[in-house]
Image (cartoon, rainbow, N blue to C red; front, side):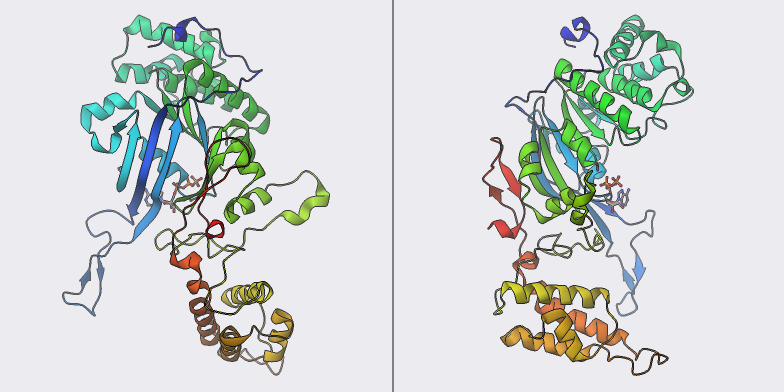
Length: 452
Ligand SMILES: Nc1ncnc2c1ncn2[C@@H]1O[C@H](COP(=O)(O)OP(=O)(O)OP(=O)(O)O)[C@@H](O)[C@H]1O
């Protein structure tokens, strides 16, 4: 346990210091994957398939929650991890700490591969890596006193004697901005922000190097969030902590992070210095996320709502770039003679057909509304014309039910997707590129074919 832990002054609510990262790599994640098997129990994943003999199919559906993720975190650094709900942030955090078994890949913590160790050795390592969860309410046992809660990890790791643990717990309560006299009180007497401070004291009790913070301020009022974040920054400085900070809120990520990783459907799609990421985003998904931040200036409201469509299922994610099915910058397939304008029109037509966002209408009107009257030249134009042909025809009378149309929509969608979307490099290859950074010195990674 470090000397300075006991001698430095208590953390205050104000005057956050900028944490400084060293060159030493504390954590290196290499090709890490975590797949979940749908369901559980003996018959999970077993289905009957009467086209086979015997008619049992044991092929299991696997949720690719984290898929081939690699990055490093330096000592004293905060790496922010941001992305929409369900993209795999929590699973990544838990797999790094081996609270979940990795499906593949390595997790080097201070040079040692955690994926290789088991039992007592893993338990010992756990004291060096802690986790703080989102909900301070449910993560504190209401029957225990604050002191017992903070001391519990020390007891589990056989740290200090009873007197030493009490002394350390009181010191830590003060460090996290609580009155040490709260030692004998129960959690129900505390506000959300105070409870999260108790969680911080508990995580710090075993003197960890690395903390995974999983949405630690999301459940708190905005006014309390900044105070808790400031305390976390002060504790980082004082105890030499390294954070992986998970949040979906970009303003929280901007407040706390040194570098930021953006996650989409189990992959990291962009990783750069905070300043670089916010000022010079290079992945269309990051751009869309940044543009979806509510802007205080009402005159600028045009920029919102750019993230269209549903996130695909992590059971069967898109080939190539996982964002391609929603990407406004999908690259044109090279095998057609398409101008930028005609590609943009073809793409929006393809999207409208796939989502069935227009009523059946005459071919001439489709050409006019989607293509300014001119289809793309050559083979691309022939394919579009064929798709228009198979779309259901318009109703002749308003009371007439639409002609049996589902097949026409599906046929046109399949034709367009197979001929255009799936021919794009975005569908054929997985992108991974390092770019020149404009701000700061850290490498800028953006997994997007636009940067080839
Ligand atoms: N135990 C599990 N079994 C099966 N699927 C799971 C399990 N845990 C998570 N998943 C799935 O893995 C994917 C990633 O989930 P995860 O909770 O890691 O995302 P997240 O980005 O942290 O989302 P949120 O911000 O909503 O917590 C989701 O599709 C989720 O449904």
